[in-house]
Image 1 (cartoon, one colour):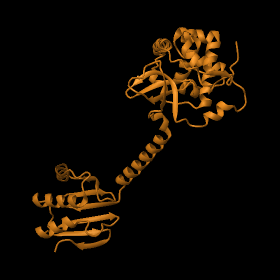
Image 2 (cartoon, helix red, strand yellow):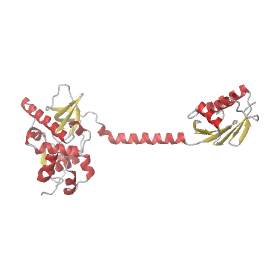
Image 3 (tube, one colour):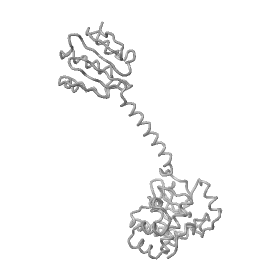
Image 4 (cartoon, helix red, strand yellow):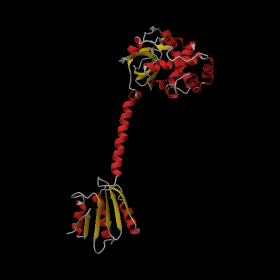
Length: 331
């Protein structure tokens, strides 16, 4: 029962032997078809593999976990017969944490399937793997430089793109010509991949959520309360944008009015005007007139411009107490 060695093998940057013979391409195509079928047994699609791109160091760690599964007879038997990922046994037998195994499970399974079965000879010949030396070599240095183009075997065709397997064990989505064939080696630029921009998207969405929360909080925050004393007292709760966030009353007639007017989210000026108009038409104006009382932040100048014009036209008796500043609105 061998111990797990995290850096026993690594992917090499050495270029594979390029064999463009139709016979080789056809053999690869057959191997890829079988690989797709075997991955399905583990509920994995080939296109699932390109969404997250592990770094070179992470890819090497994944590779060594795959080899550990292959080289341990008991674990490989469970893996191969049950078609299940041996999570619990790996957690017991290796120092690898669960989060890593969960995140890269699909890649580990794909490597283990390809490297364990001699049927995948052409794919195995293409992938360049060497025994690791614990010094910073050419592979580690070269992998720190981002490549503009990628060379790999086409595993699956997509619309205007393809999923390739590189000799360094990468599953990448690249741009591809329509006539490119599965099993063929191509050199292409990487296509758009959401996973590549996860950090930027996460930051952007966090900002959007934060801004939205601030706006919602600001919108719902009470800025002033306005009580309109008709024969029924109507209370309006208003935000700093002079929008009605709540309206209520204690009387039956007042509730009938509010149901009729539907003031929620209405603008303050139009809402006060509609209340006074309704009160005028339904004999709800007291003999002494209507009193409008503002508490909290005072109304700004001309905040009730339409209401004042209506009052003037109808010659109504209205008094306004604007946070302590009391005056008549009617002439």
